Image 1 (cartoon, rainbow, N blue to C red):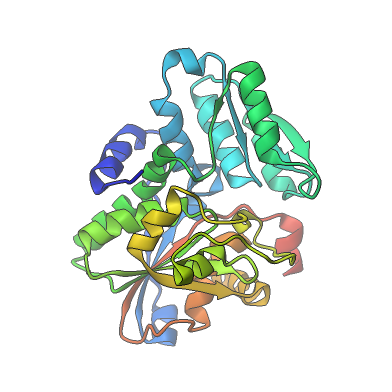
Image 2 (cartoon, helix red, strand yellow; image 1 turned 90 degrees about the vertical axis):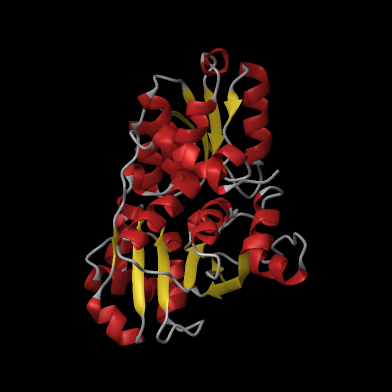
Length: 320
């Protein structure tokens, strides 16, 4: 299955009244620091606090009425959970969401506040996919996957549509695009649209160290699962492997992958708070971490950087 820029434009027309058009911002201090021209896409300011609302809304709006009557089910560490719960609430649809017991408290509480029934599971001993499929079969609910779904990818790609529109208004042609990557839905969708608008653009996936399965898979040109037993504070980016649908798209679109350490991410969260005056969750900060730690040569380049979410527990934010 593949996706075109037209699919993303159609998705945008469907969802634009249900989402926030998030800003694309630049900062003189950061530009001078890096000797580059950087534009940050602030999806941490999206409704529900992340880009995930785009894909969830698009998926729900594509479901037929007879399917919707039985409700939806989804599994997620948090951002997709909140997005599906919110999108379902807006359409008065029943939602059941499967979340790990150790998910950030703010993500669990917000999902409940949006009216969803939250089912907690032990990520070490239970399979969220199995629980989700069981509920789907027993209750005839529609399963909304977090990334490996063409409708979800098209929805996430609408962030790329907005970026392109804003850059064109400024008469800017970007050289580099840095985007976080878990299962690969956001970068698959956004890179597809941006590459259509800016054919010479070089796009890179950014992942936490130990969970850089997309980076390794791109290098080997085939899907490779994470072998790591390590942990990361980037809870939103811990997919075990690239998606069957997302990976071929990313293999075609991306120049390569980059990984960053938790320590680099922590420093980046502080930096963004101080210099952009925004709150960013760990997974949302990885692309900026790659930029600030000069994992790629950006001197005299025009760079677009995705800041994908802002759902960080206040305890963690305070401790940083």
